[in-house]
Length: 355
Ligand code: PMP
Image 1 (cartoon, rainbow, N blue to C red):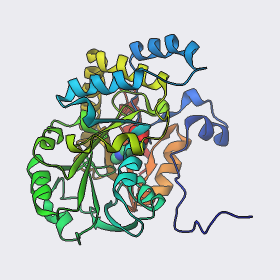
Image 2 (image 1 turned 30 degrees about the vertical axis):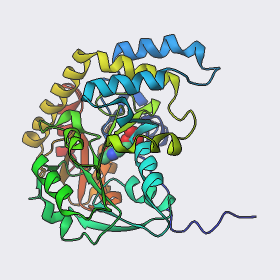
Image 3 (image 1 turned 180 degrees about the vertical axis):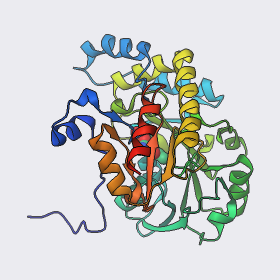
């Protein structure tokens, strides 16, 4: 027996971990700096690590309260009703829950290209079809509604990423507002703010007071340094309150993950250090890299290096793992995540040496 025809579903290819790269190259993982997955180089808040330790003995039972506690804390944080927070397994989970809640077989979605691959994957898992809009122009830092509306043809879901991965470009609040006004009533705008902590621009969450065709997705994987625990959330209109219980996979967000996220939300100092370092590193990379770079609102910088596969391979051999953006549909570019004040200058020097 075989599964059904899965050829429409492309496998997700994550960036390779330091251990794996070190093994292949016969190196010590400690000699590698991984700047390929936009992780927090400071790791999680110590308070989150403590919460993980404290929660570890409870993992023999199913999660109970933490999920609701986290929803309530996030609701207070965003000044929305608790029913407006959908706690999910990563922001990927939030994208899946939205697909599950909105897509009927054959519905079309509109996703950015280049862009985060999971929009397309989630839509296809839910039997949707994918069209794309073009974000490959370097002068599009301020992404405009026209970028999307030129390609828009009444799709059921339109995905916006701000700051955008992998370019770093942003939609202004006015642009999102314009889009929310311009699309048809049956179109849901998903505003993915996975990198929202790193930008100076305001979140789109407050637009939910006025629009019920909008959802915002966020994550604890990036600025909160909890990528391995898989906790994210959606902030959705109040009128969808009833849908969450129907699309929520049972026990999807773990007790350990939710407890760590709760602790991370209380550690303002850790978040401040994380964001300050990332903004510093972003400016440093743009100043110091010899290759042309794109303006970025995220914790990463895109650099035009020519043969990106060869450059990524060469930097890796010298201990710096960066992302070749061919898989994002941006050949010729590498994406360099912001490191610490120690690793970022070393990374810039290594990249300059090989380009
Ligand atoms: N959105 C964007 C734009 C991302 O880059 C990522 C992770 N790479 C995610 C969502 C998913 O994040 P997670 O599932 O780890 O919360």
